[in-house]
Image (cartoon, rainbow, N blue to C red; front, side):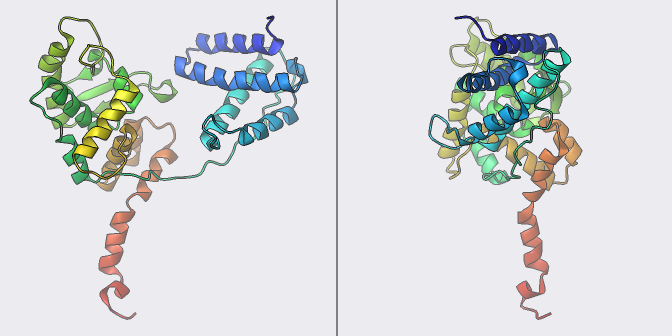
Length: 312
């Protein structure tokens, strides 16, 4: 079947993103949204880019809002805005390259993002209990303890942990280098002394035993020397939380939230936490300030006259 003009332009846009060194993840994500948009245009019998108006984009935004997921649930605000960001970028490309005279997406509004807080945070005591649960006398147990130490020490994302290579670990400096994180942003994050100690033993003794002469540059590998999958990591952290008796739904992202929250509660600079987590915007990091409400409640309990039974 012959490609439509829109499909051809989407392909040229993809090539431009690759030339500009956008990460494969970003390119793939934008193409998903643009191909959905191309399908919408086909339903509307719109075949030319010049026939797309701001009203067409508003109709697509409305259609996306009401379109349920495969599970029948509403699409998140984040997903909807990612789709609109993809369209904005695509139409800037079309105008810059001269395919259209006007940027129909220039004034495309984004949905208001709710400022939600993480629902689950581990306490320092709960974190310690989970981390100390793996049986470090066996190879996989030691690997798992090292993974948990690394998650809590650095607040690293699941995908970033999966992609860590041996060359990314600098034990002498006590840091990890994270390459190609979210927004294709590299950063260096510090390790705790405990995480350094476990990583050193893991890299020198445990990992070679798991490899058994097979090749891999990934830090964390399976018993078959394959890179760990997202599902395997998710199951790993859930398993140890359950064994430790922590009655919370614990994920890799909960370790990230817990790391950030505990740093902020212990007076770490928001700028430092922002740099450590790889947040593009400080406002994303600032939400962890709200999680110190437990400290505020304790101060309120101790200092408010009505809590002390004193009339004011």
